[in-house]
Image (cartoon, rainbow over the protein chains, first blue to last red):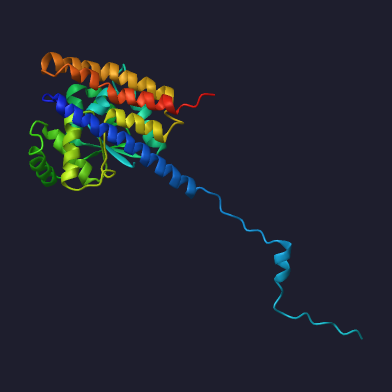
Length: 68
Length: 206
């Protein structure tokens, strides 16, 4: 579309808006990249150490077989 | 960024044989899972200048031609006329499409951008919602988001091409036939200059 009546003042206002938009784009893009990075972080795999595994005991008693 | 509603001047300049940015733009839209909409009346405006360009836009599967709600258009036109009565009916239609479909607006018409921004301020629309982007802003967005598709050399090349083949002829015509102050010519390079400087600053020297 043509902008027949564009004046210098109007252009200066529009250029200011344009610069603000450019800065805003940079901020929004950085923010969305950061969110994406967090989203894509691998799931943490928790390993049970041998020490901790000893604590896990079966909740039943092993019956000793009687020797005939 | 989601979806863009585009003004006629975007495909008109992007499909210019001296610029050839349309395919890169569509690839960026596709790879980023974005969408492009265009009001029917704006598409018709492209067709009045070039049937081939209209067909290219129409046939692109990522571009959806949309209808703009008449009552919303009339309301926005009435409200925006108090800001700047000089802009055209299709400008109001483009602003209405951005509001109706809740999308970002892209145009290289500075008068339209000013009106759309003032409208947003009056309606208390947050700055990051229904963003208004000029061509230079769109180039910066493409580079910022997808350096894999739109690296710094490509960004610089297209900034210079658009300035050379769109801005200079438009400003020349403005000065010669529409009584624009000559100072406009210098200032219209500023956004492209900023884009180029920012991207060069961002390039790591190995």
